[in-house]
Amino acid sequence: MRRLLALVLACTFAASAQVVLHTEQSPLNTPAQQKKHYVVLVSLDGFRYDYAKIHSAHNLLAIGRRGASAPLGMRPSYPSITFPNHITLVTGLLPEHSGIVWNSFYDPDTRKTYEYKKNSGDGSFYNGTPLWSLAEANGMRSAAMFWPGSNAEIAGRRPTFWADYLDKYDGEKRIDQVITWLQLPPAERPHFITLYFADTDHAGHDFGVDSPQLDEAVHHVDALMGELSRRLRALHLPIDLIVTADHGMIDMVGPVLTLSELPGMAPLLAGARHEGILLYPETEAQKQAIYEGFRAHPDPRFTAYRLADTPVSLQVRENARLGDPYLVFHLPVEVRYDTTTEPKKRPHGEHGYDALAMPEMKAIFFAEGPDIRRGVQLPTFQNTAIYDFIAKLLGLTPAANDGSLTSLLPALEHR
Image (cartoon, rainbow, N blue to C red; front, side):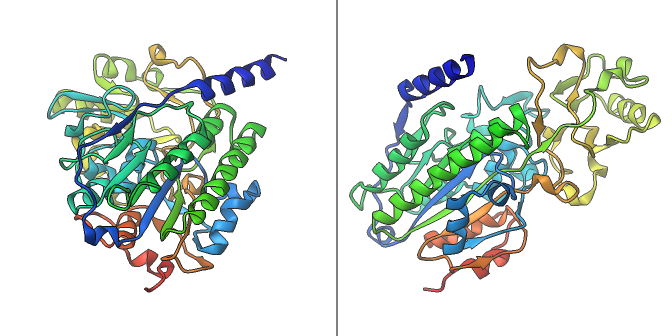
């Protein structure tokens, strides 16, 4: 009864919640851009690469049959965290180059702290040219029905249309808004649109990857993707639909790892600045002492590195926002800095790990539309490739980035 009441209350809240929509003073689409095709980019946060097959997500699998898919997954950038990878998807930049290295971090150069729930709209933290800014700079309108960073002015622009994020906002209403934008007159209609859902990420964190709640979340967003696909096709516009995710998910193992309780670490960590598990000692001597403290008592769950010496494959050496020393975790364990950082609820599932060592971090990729070849199954590719791929679909020249179109060329239908 209590579960039913909670569900009713949640549905009531979702139905009554009102999203705040914004419209920038953007020029209309130029005549040349009005002739271009459209792209709708969807992120299903935390949707692991194998969920669609395991849970029989019929609509997503059908999109793959009508177009392209990556059965073994798309590889997220490291760390496989939400905000860094959503920014990678729309800029083609690795987190160390985009500037968004974690959901929350400290910038030693500016002495400013980024916290995704508080100041993600501060464009000074971001590098690169997001796809919406690229479109706007070329006389093509864009829109964001939620996407991390879409509320910030980056490269001098925001999408023409964007919304303040509202987690509980009804999924069908999100789709309604996308369709409404695509029904605008050609001069006003956005050609690049993002859409975001967090259902599978929440279920994975709260209940674990083998839970009935995760299965329910997969089928819920799969049904929404079926609805979105049908409604897009009913518009009879040249729309390419791309459904992907920022990362996968894995169940946690073992007891909580508290860094300050490791042998000899309490006095070394005392007073050192940190954001989550990212460490920011003030002096070189403090950095080296903390590093040597971790190395004096090796732990199979993680390895400590000086930032400049982290494994090349991780590509996390070039930004002081990553902290120093830097900890690389080999097992999915919950980590706390000290006992004062204990969360209210311990998660069942987590992400953030290296997808090369932990394939559960890989994300989905499905695409269909007039520019997507039918029935193409792609090998695993790096998510930095999405940027050039979408720029190609929109007929735009991409800004400098870390990706390459090569791995996705087989999915392109020549026109």
